[in-house]
Length: 104
Length: 506
Image (cartoon, rainbow over all chains, first blue to last red; front, side):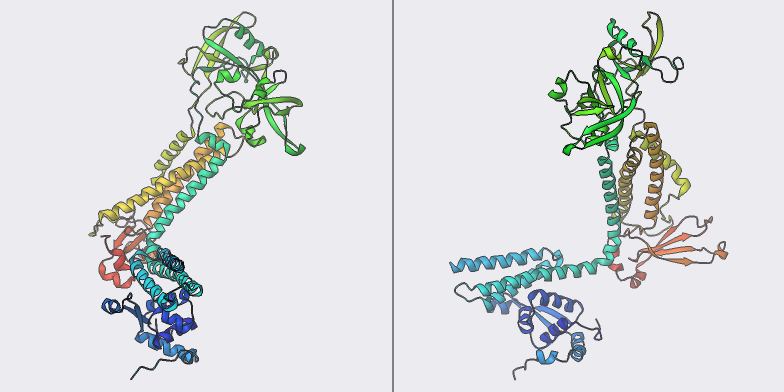
């Protein structure tokens, strides 16, 4: 998918949430307020279109914290470009889901 | 208390997700299940308190789990879309076979719903049918009807017999009105053909009456009538309680004694809807009719002549003909139609399937088998479809004479067989021999004015990139039939699905 392709508001919101630091499905739900039945299919579509990519957390990390490993999502370069276009289309997006400041 | 409720909710959530995972294609199901299980664990950790049962949190968890169905459906749809080009290719063959199977089932269903067709499809065989003879004056001696008077039947019946064990008499049929009282005080009237028969008629023929009831047996004082299977279905709607009911035939009230079986192999001289059981005294007049006898020796052949006494004591010749005949069964007619269609087929279409013999490409044996199996499946489904269709057309029309119905079935069967086989071969030629997809994108190639220097015709392509089909416009000595040209792997860049489709085919 090219950066010029128009994303729906939901898709743009999820993309912005990923950009804002939400790395897994449940945090995206928490941040956007969307239900699981919307967030996960949207993430699949975004991954299919190459706007986000997923990777599994290392088992050792999960074992150390005594929990199952999570699947993390990150924005791709094409995703960043698409988000930039979407932010122009939906100006309130960045205000709704501001990017978390990285600790120094 | 609260712990088991919490565990129950947890099990329910996992069950929802597990059920949803069934929708996910097998290849990606494991990862999908792992992600959802992990997310479910994290949501539970974040929402549900460590101790105690918190219903709003559990409800939120259940709602979260239910979202798995939507996600699974979305994954399944994505996989389906990815597979669409391939499925479009291979699926078209499956759809073709499925459509033929559905059509066959529809024709069978229609046929079984029509009594006339059902009688032919499931014929009633009578074990005691040999030796039942129709006795008539020799052909050309007693006019066209070849009937005998009722008193002759009575005369023969009273004599000591060496050739026949029993006689029956069938009067000439007459058209009359049958009235059957229906529920609610209304009446059902129909024009029928009735004939008086001796009480021995059904015994001599070997027919066991259906729905015979004590009421029907007991009404000795009233005339009794036996309905044909077709009339019973048409007028009484197949009512199993018909025996013993009173009906009016030609103004006379009668009691239904039973329903005759649906026998198609019998060649009775009269087409009758209702047989009125008549005492022998009433049949003893000069009324014309037919004498039917059961020969003592069953294997007496299909027809012979005999000399027998007449009522005045003189002797005369009579012809005896077997009443049960099975020369033209629908299956025989269909086989004959199929034979004619096979003979005529080469004159109407070319038989080769478009394979160019001079080709370096050798297909895998499984690909070849699949291709031939597809053709065999089409023909195997086509034949019962044509058979049932021809029966539906020929015997679906009520009151069509058996001979005419036979001709209609022959013509319908021949036409349908010919068209069907033509279609099966044409469809096979129009498909890629590798993936069995329909060839698309027809393109006109060459110029008709250059027929003798270069080929001109139509070129079709397999969207899977397996090859091109060249169909010549004019048949020439060097390009008589259509040819299939396999494309080598260098062409695969032009076809999005070519690498995946070609794997294992060659």
